[in-house]
Length: 259
Image (cartoon, rainbow, N blue to C red; front, side, top):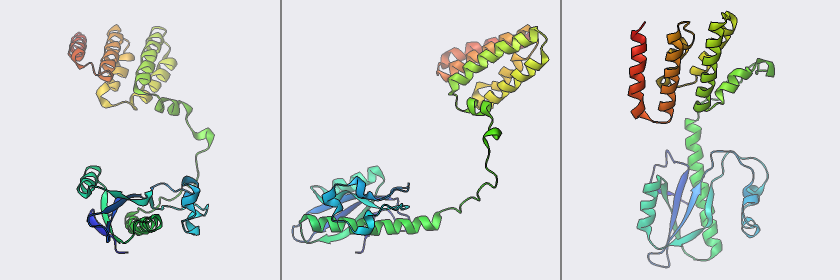
């Protein structure tokens, strides 16, 4: 079989293609199937298809060994389509390869199934050749994997938080920082600062987390007000309530000018 690309490039196949075949006995008749080469390894496709179709496939394709990629026609038989121009437009819109896999001389199910399988195998072969050329070298394995004791639970906890929860946690820590300042507890203040810095490191710069932390640990009462304003501003950004932000920015500037 000589597969011909009507859309796409045989040197850089996408891994998904509409395969078409023309009828030799019925003028204008066109048959199609869709071939996809899964990027994730899978075991035998036998468990995914009906028994009566599995009986038509080569035995080696039904083994339960894992394979890196196996192109499969969906449906597993060439189906007749009424409008080839529609198929061409569909491939364009979906960014699929469009491949002519030749002419078909019979409408019987077995012939259409065998041709669909053969076309998929050839397309898969082209795709695997392409992947072999562009696949990056495998990274060297880590010599010493991290043990459970080396994993920082606090860092993992902060990383899994959504942004709203990170901001809520910052709000609590602002209160803790002000309590530490009032009680002259330098150890608590430093620990609170460290936690706040770890959280803002995980937030986008637009939230101005560094300014928030600096304000929160400022012993002046103005710092507490600034920290709350920065936090309020962050929530407005998160909720996309942009119209409220200029007034908050103005209040921040006024407080800073009082210094």
